[in-house]
Structures are given as structure tokens and as C-alpha cells.
Length: 141
Image 1 (cartoon, rainbow, N blue to C red):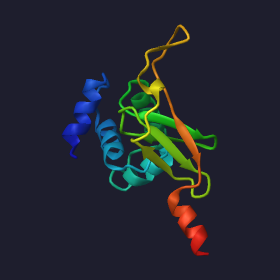
Image 2: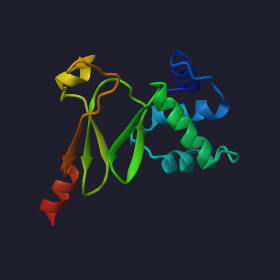
Image 3: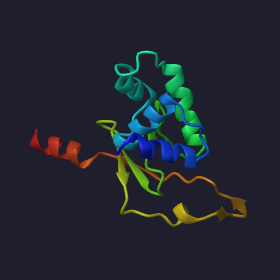
Image 4: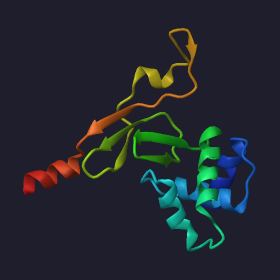
């Protein structure tokens, strides 16, 4: 994954590329950990000393508003972002607080354009529980 792909995503979604926007989009496309604003800021600030948390916050909002990234509000205490804009579900582990992509579980609602006579432009499907890694650790202890 290179910066050209990040720039292409921005332009495809109608977001004017800038150095910071390209770097933030590239970060999302190469880090599959569903990072928060702080995660992205920490990941990029060493390479971009003039980058501010406010710029990261505003850029991530802009990306999600223009469908260049998904804003995930699965946990009421934080918002995280996903560079994968293809329809898929997420699983949130209540113990380790990680968010996992779930690609093999497709809800019929993920592809619908209307529901109950309403126009649908976004669908979020979340599962919550304990992830397999945390269950494994629990059994070992």
C-alpha cells in the first residue's frame, strides 16, 4: 500500500488531497486496528511534527462524511475508524477493547437501500462479547 492509493481514495471520494490528508488516509489503509484519533496522531506525529490532534480529528470526520473511511462508534467511550469501506460487520471485545472485522457474517441489511420506506445511506452491524484470544487466556488461567 502506498500513498498513491491513499490519494486515489481521497479523490474518488471527493476529498481534496493535502499532505496531512494523504498521510492520515494512508495510515487507515495500512493499519487494520481500527485506530482512534489519538492512535492516528501518535502514529503520525513523529513523522509530521506540525500535525495536530485537531487536524487528525477534523480529517477523520471529513473522511467518514465523504465515505472514504468508516466511523465506528461501537464503544460509547471512544470512536475509531476503519479504512475498509466495503460492507462488513465488527466485533467488539468487552475485555480487551479490540475491534475486529467480521467478513463472513453478512446481514441482509448491509446491502439494503431502503427500510420501512426510509432511505438508507449507512448501516453498522456490531457484535459485542469476549474475543477468542481473551477466552483462550481465561481458560489457561
